[in-house]
Amino acid sequence: MPRGVNSSHIVSVPDLRPLARRRLPKVVFDYLDGGADGEVTLRENCRAFEDVTFRPRGAVSVPTCDLRTRVLDFDLALPVLLAPVGYSRLMYPEGEIAAARCAGQAGTVYILSTISGHRLEDVKAASTGPVWFQLYLMGGRAAAEGSIARAKQAGFSALVVTIDTAVAGMRERDSRNGMKELMGGGILRKLPFLGQFLSRPAWLVRFLLDGGVPHLPNVVLPGQGPMPMTDVGAALASSTVTWNDLRWIRELWSGPLIIKGVMTGEDARRAVDEGASAVVVSNHGGRQLDSVPASIQVLPEVVAAVNGQIEVLMDGGVRRGSDVIKALCLGARAVLVGRAYAYGLAAGGPAGVTRAIGMLRTEMERTLKLLGCSSVSALDRSYVNVHANRLAREIESVQA
Ligand SMILES: Cc1cc2nc3c(=O)[nH]c(=O)nc-3n(C[C@H](O)[C@H](O)[C@H](O)COP(=O)(O)O)c2cc1C
Image (tube, rainbow, N blue to C red):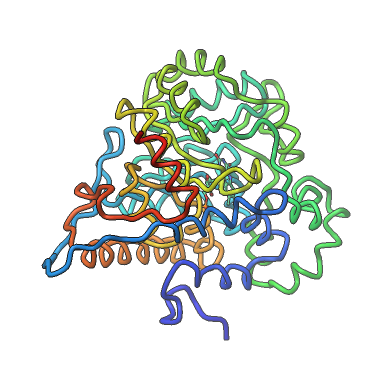
């Protein structure tokens, strides 16, 4: 009898991963779980958090602790935002709508990917909290202009431009599994997947009832309609965003603009100069350029480079509340989580997303209490030691 997301055996986010694996066909699980090339960065994102250890204050009573924070002008109940995860509808039919609703209930932001199976208007309507739109230029400038106008009209409160996707990363698992055929091919090309689909009957029934995910309703090609799911990789490659594009995007979007995918102090400075309100230190969860450092390793360089002029968020490898606290100690205003909630979504739909957020929240509270710190706003560098030579050198060089 498979265990559910609320079973007492599920005690932390990593427990949701095997549950997701049991619920999803292999091709879909690997799409969610996998990274680029040798998956060095994917592994490093999680491992590098081990290089940061805590310096607790003992004999301090912390009866309650405050996780509330302010990101840009948004008051959030906790310093964790839900990252854009393309094709969430493949993991669970309600996909993006369910995740947005859960984020709103938890008092935080949901960031909708351009590669969404649900209309952006429906996703916005599902959440009681702020929803941000993550923009890819796939489909060309006219399509992007249309999405920006719709996002504005629908009440999205910030625009996130992802800059690390000059081409789609080489996700070897997807290539071996035939992810492109699954997403793009006709019914005959899906036949090889029959075995793995039949071994996941609950997923299959939901997927069929949902009618598959044939189009991208938020990428409307002028004169043609919504872009078919085919060849998202090629569409990304032919629509690289450049710093010059930020100028016309800025003209269309007067609200907060966030640059996601910053991995150097230089790019962070450039984002400041281009009028960004925040940057996200991110390597796309290890799915783009492999062998870039873990995000937590780059965070100090970026924090130093922006010098308090704009806010710094980070994502990559966050699986525990203690990871969130470490990132805040090293200068992040908040973190984004991708797989942490997507494993939950795959494992149990909205209940799984809520469970993932709930476990992170409980872990953050416990970590703060054990640290002797009553509020996330009081965290700073004095609460951590940084051990790995590489990370220590990184920090020393920006502090010198
Ligand atoms: C399945 C999957 C799909 C993703 N799709 C997008 C996307 O459409 N746009 C984007 O900017 N980032 C995308 N990302 C990257 C996430 O927004 C985020 O940067 C990353 O997941 C953080 O790493 P984590 O999964 O270890 O938390 C995706 C990540 C995953 C796992």
